[in-house]
Image (tube, rainbow, N blue to C red):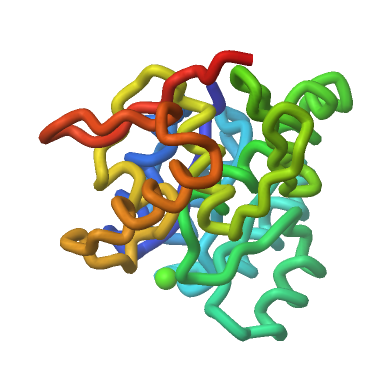
Length: 226
Ligand code: CA
């Protein structure tokens, strides 16, 4: 569990991040402008900050500058506009640890949050989360390679993210909405049947017994016999 400060002025995006981080067991706090974001970040109460660049009162660069000038070493993940190389370079030069282009998927945010928190905690944690094993399935999270009984399974990037999410939640029913927001992001049409289609793909690759349909609720991942 980490205390995560979200500085973002678009309510739709901050609530998307906040809800998702909460469901992962983190404790998020949202600030909608740069001045209070900087204040909060300097309080020393947070383990990590997700910082938007375009903010009222003080933009993301100003927040970073203030933070680093005051000696704060809090890890910062900056949200940039897609394709803005200047933004990205400027943010990293200004002391950001990582960046993500909008729109992003929740799975991507989560991966970056994990990575930053791990680096903060030192190498001890790094070895632990490089792979994920459930039954006869193993995911190499660094190389993004999936194997079953030691044999490689070819997965697309989306299929890999979906399988990772299932394997992190063994035995728990995940709704279509949860799967959509984690793997496809907030820009996806909630009425879409893309989740069902991808669950079908995964079943074909890892075995249909791995994923049960829970009528009216969603899907549940089961442990395959090793
Ligand atoms: Ca903004």
